[in-house]
Amino acid sequence: MSWLPTPEQRSRKDLLATIVLVLVASILLAGIWLTSQQRKIDHSLADTPASVAKGATQGAVPQLLREAWTHSTEAPSLIARESGALVVNDSRVTTIDALTGAERWHYDQQREICGLASPSKWQEVAIVFRGPKGCGEVISFDLASGQYAHTRDALGPENVTVFAGNRRAGTYAPERVELWRDDLVRTVEVGQQEAPHQPNQLTYTECSITSVQAHEDLLVTAQQCPQKKKKLVRLLKATPEESETPEVLHEYTVPAGAEVVSATDKAALIYIPPSQDKGPRTQLLQDDGTFETQPSSAAGDVELKDRTAHEGALAMWFDGTRLRTYDAETLKPAFTVEGALGTGAMMGGKLLVPVNAGIAVIDPTRGTRERIIPVDRGTYRGEVTLKAPAHGAIVERRGDTVVGLVDQAVKNSEESAP
Image 1 (cartoon, rainbow, N blue to C red):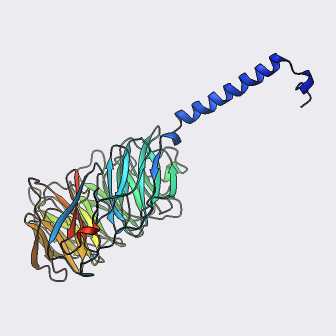
Image 2: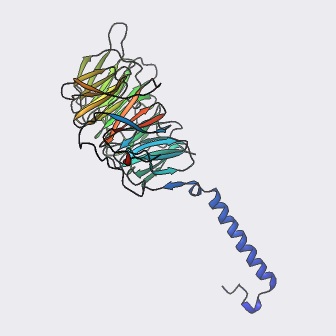
Image 3: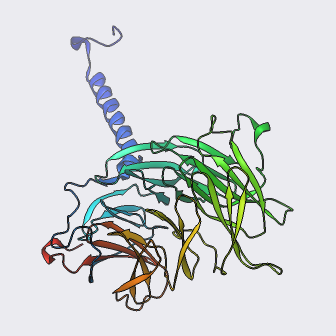
């Protein structure tokens, strides 16, 4: 450091130059901070456990319900667990206490959210953000506390559907689909790849992906290929040896318009709309190449977002007019709930299904309707997604509103203002 003047050699100009350099460096650092993404983050953690219902009978279906809270949301699907219900407003994700409606934690990066997912066997929620590289930045958070869990940053399509199986989450767009483990490490990608390692081994990259389901170690895709009337349904390993090289268990050519509506670890269920010579039907496609056709009533618009669910021993698909249920292990038909408004949830050994008059209590072993819990939804007319995340609490998604319904027996003191 001999090039620096010694203290007795320093002039007034040297001191001024040093001060200027320090000021410039400070300004540059401040500018970097002011323009950084980190400064824009608003992150608040949960400081108390989720509320516990007092006064309701443990494990019982409520006799009466009362509306405890409402929150607006822009989330594409309803995520509600014991730790709370998630709502999205602009770029902010907030977890709401299912019993009280009070905020538990929130995260706001001031960037557009592409979607979020929380597989049933995860303890985290994955949030996908739009960035310069598309919808490829993902951050997961502990559902109970809001603490950071894992991150990933990769190239992604401009618009994606974020989806969840029971063990995997992922995104899909017409050009590609990918799955992640709970640590957000990608296990498989299907379709077009930005920089394929083995391009000669990729197939059907020209085909558009129209629907996807995942369960355990099975990934199922429905694809429409150019110049083809029929569709391609592929049963793939969710964790192949190389994530860039999908491993096919079996491929099926299926009628036009078919979509995947559910999956187990070894099979997929597809819905086939009516044609000129055949009525509507479902097909159960096994990973060993065998399949079974099942007659079915016509479905409405085969939209899959928030219309499929696994609850206990049942798999469910809401077809727009009725709730169809299947054995969760075999996907054999169980029963149908006519007049349903959406998917339901298990509570106290019963299946709770939203209907016009309220919530139907269904015996899941026989499919019989035991009673209806009255619910006044005011002027709302439309689909309802129902979750039963906590003892004594039910959460409904009604369009762009999430509503908390609490057992009438729960004491008022358990509530607080949102």
